Amino acid sequence: MHAGNIFSALMAWLVAKSQGGTMVLRIEDLDRERSKPRFIDAVQRDFETLGLTWDEGPYFQHDRDDAYQAAFDTLVDKGLVYPCFCTRADLHAASAPHHGEKLVYPGTCRNLTPQQRMERAVSRKPAMRLRVPDETISFDDLIQGHYSQNLEEDCGDFLIRRSDQAFAYQLAVVVDDGEQGVNSIVRGMDLLCSTPQQMYLQDLLGIQHAQYAHVPLMVGEKDRRLSKRDHDAALDVLLERFKTPEAIIGHIAGITGLAPTCDPTTPEELLGTFDIRSLTTLFPDLVQIQWH
Image (cartoon, rainbow, N blue to C red):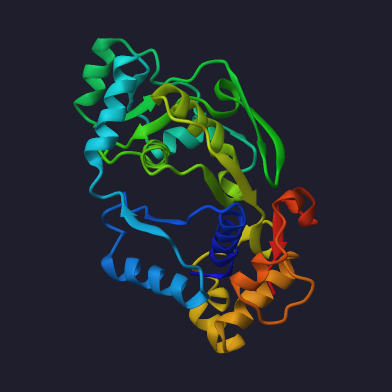
């Protein structure tokens, strides 16, 4: 974990606990090649070290293909799924960027004839996309406020199964949230634009909408969010720098505005003054917070 992950996890913990909720730990290991047992163990140890305990789980995605397949089949039966043969290069060449990082799929493969699909399938295994309507989905985010997205104009048809047959993130998390009773989702601002897609899937699959809160991203420098390459913000380095988990939590709470100072503290101590009603005015910049 790095400081950005810790901040998001801390916010999720505070929002859940302040409402009398429970924390669910889900290991999103759809990518079998990158999801090694040692990484999973390390993440759990990191949470325990920081005092960010969970009440349910860990749940895993690698053994839930049957559930994802059932949801996929429901969407197929609705006539909303079609094969896409575009490469990543094709997508970047043809798609228009919206909202910073997001590329809007232009519908290249949406209306291929059965013959064209057969011909393209000879040389490339297709991914599967979900058709979206010309419909605007809106919701009120606990941090970002009111947010709207037109699915056709701002998103385009999106992947629900990859060309390697792995189910896509959007489909998997919606199915998991529904089955695991997740009704409060706190995550980074970079996933704000994915939320209308997930709400659309929830509607199609008969799953209730959750309450969302998208926290500002922790950045190493303007417009560059923290990542694994920012070793100075990694938890092991933070422990060397700050000496204790309480000092790490305190520093993050201080620079983000969760606490008036950067004095050492614990999640439980922060919970005593945490007010979910103040989230829309808590952060001076709703998009990013400078790490230092």
